[in-house]
Length: 216
Image (cartoon, rainbow, N blue to C red; front, side, top):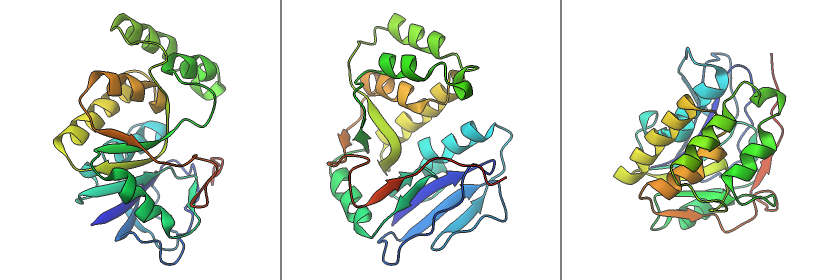
């Protein structure tokens, strides 16, 4: 079974309908909204006491705790599938890998650059991003190790992927929900067969990354 997974909490997005023949065995949206619906999706109601940003990280970073399948492809709630190509594209990228992601589409190649870029955005000002990156430096994290976009991910159920996801969620709970900051740190620190999608995140015919918007 190959599952497409997303999560929408706190009315942060509408649920984009799926194209006919999208290729996935099932498509599941984890949500706290009983009224949420979208063509081709089944919804899984999982209320949370965590803030909506952190609540959505559970399915994203620990997908096998929400669906009992061997391969999960994650897309953020703002992402729309344009046609049926993405399923096979993701499966090909996952061949021999535990986790795959897109390369970062902007000219930054370092978690320290990424944190500096976004740490003063209004939604991030209460997050301890400076303390987070200082901790990573103290651990010996090198600069310019790499940077990846995390709006779409491929996951294969392996012990390494499961352990990586649990550690990634713990970093989000401890520090900040800017998961692109903690992702390179854990790639550097933990054993994982990691690969990248062989396409540009924004310049492809399979996915459209739209802005987040509130429905309520």
